[in-house]
Structures are given as structure tokens and as C-alpha cells.
Length: 136
Image (cartoon, rainbow, N blue to C red; front, side, top):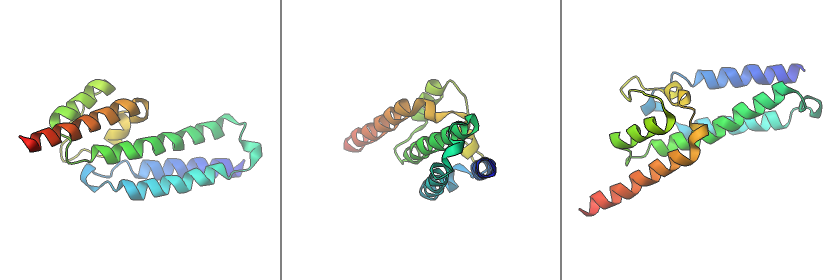
């Protein structure tokens, strides 16, 4: 039981610690490595705790973060324009300002893990449009 609660405290502490990282300072590779370490710790917890709802919650939190981080990495692409960010607002039904104060928490508030496919499509579209613009 202590292992499970220690895991919850660690996950909340680490993930909430990322909230204030500004958009241009987000190092998704480093965050992804940390998330994988946490994921391994969760998987290696004693078998007895796996049936507990708290364990499933912990597992889900880590899984969601593992889904979000590659999307954040993709959104960092040079091809993303304001129109693509506007599409992201439409898809997520949330409004945000991507100004100098835009940070990791703002991205988490978008619940990107629920829109993984749509986010990937927006990023792909931005890449294709950039190729066309370059040819023109």
C-alpha cells in the first residue's frame, strides 16, 4: 500500500512540476524519458495493488502523459502556424492564447490525449502545407 501511495505522490509531484515550463523551454525528450521511468516503476509495483482503483488511476495518468508528450513534440514543429493552433482550439473546444506565458499546463488543460488522432492530423496538415508553400 505504501508503494502505491508513494507512486501517486511521485507522479503528481513530477507531472505538476512540469506545469510551469514555458512552451519554448519544453524538452519533450527529457520529459518522455522521465515518464518512461515512472511507467516502469508503476508496472513493477507489487501484484497485490493492481486490482485497486488507485493503481488503475495511476496507470491511466502515466499512460495519458505518454500519449501527450509525443503530441507536444509534434506541435513544436516549425510548420505549425496560427491557423493550425486555431484548428487545435476547435478540435479541443478550448480557447487559449499562445503567447510568451503559454506553458505545459496550458497544453495539459487541452486534454490532448483525448484528441491524439486529430492533433496528429493537424500536425501532418501543417507539414504538407509547408511543403506546398516552399514550392510556391
